Image (cartoon, rainbow, N blue to C red):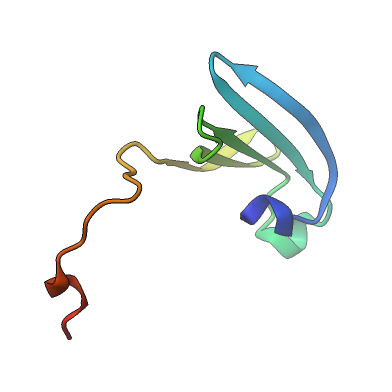
Amino acid sequence: MHVRLLRHDSADGLGRRAEQRQIIVAVADPAADDNVTKELMVLGTNDLPIEYDQWEGIIEVKRVTYSDVSLNVDLPDSTFVL
């Protein structure tokens, strides 16, 4: 998971937004991380990421949302044919 790999100055703890958990991280070396200074990961009720945001100062530069993730789905054999 990306959160474990972050080199950060501080983690502002786990906030809550309804049934979601938020992890806010201040990046230790923005120059080594595309000038990103702060990152936010929002985890859903199953603790899987549902949103990921990055900021340079007060400007949000990236937002990724996961809205159609399915786990343990059946994959047809044709998926693995080259």
